[in-house]
Length: 431
Image (cartoon, rainbow, N blue to C red; front, side):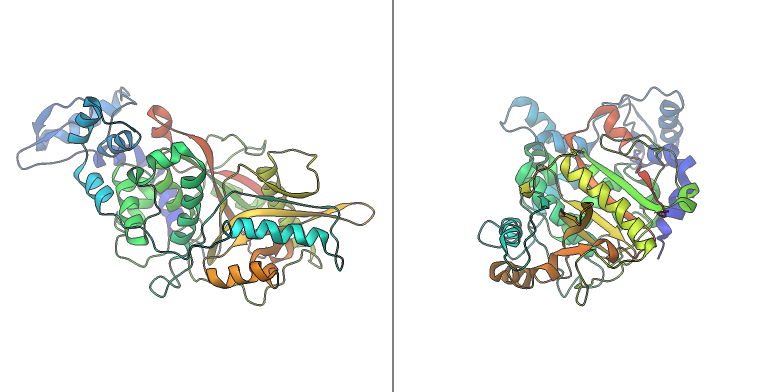
């Protein structure tokens, strides 16, 4: 199912600058404050005045929106007069949200967490006498908490759960992200709190066209979200969330030309937009997990996507020794028609005399029960059915992946992140 967001965004691209400028205006009873020059004017004059700043192309990239001030405060470890001044200017909504947001409940896995347990199982698989994998290499992200769907969000909450998984890693592994995410709270908020953060991101000009699709309102709703909403939320904190689209050549014309990112393939890049919605959570029951026996079309799609994921986790290194390796990479938000999941690693097996690579994605699905995954990993029995997905399972026509680059954007770079862009990677048919 194609999201209406993509059509809305495509039709509204030309109006983005105008829409974003209007979002900055705060109209009070008789007057309003210009967010660019801080001049107070009658409310019937403020719109043309603010737009004049934009038309003259003299916008100060360092304009500190209320939300940005909140981030600056969160990133200041020691109280000081300057931070106190910033605190007094915090946007009421942002400040209130920092105070009122609620930590999301989740089942905490012992023994170092699921990724540590997965590493142990992959290592045992290498040593297994029944099926030795001497030429197998597995690459894993660091610590990730698994957030399973609850009764309240079953069927619509997958996107939010994958955002939570992504954030659990960022809070554990990246100090710069820990300082800015959710006002420096150092925990993963629940879905209602995340919905409020997304609305705040929209109000600050992130993904204006996507916000229009939701009428700038998501709090309390059960509406499906996708990669675009994840990108907008993370980017609003200055995180460099990047989107990659995988689709056939015929879909190329549907994408807009946009700037590139640090690890993208050396091909012409195109814009997104979010082409999917979270429709229904699936537990993955009945899915085969090893990558073999697939037809030509599935193999070609699998080769492209698996190759990209391998290059991401390996930092494009050709020679990676066999074994199980922990990387510094964050997990990947993995979107396709009807569902989204989180990729926490990849396994490559070199088989036959030609050493043809065969891959398995290592995935955490919010539709699975955390206790069930933990039990399978601890007992080393049935864990493959939860976590491994071979190339032949990639049956959807299009996919999206979101990853987070290192660093925190500010100034002009932060302004550019307000437009949700992506890289287009073509699915091709093997000869």
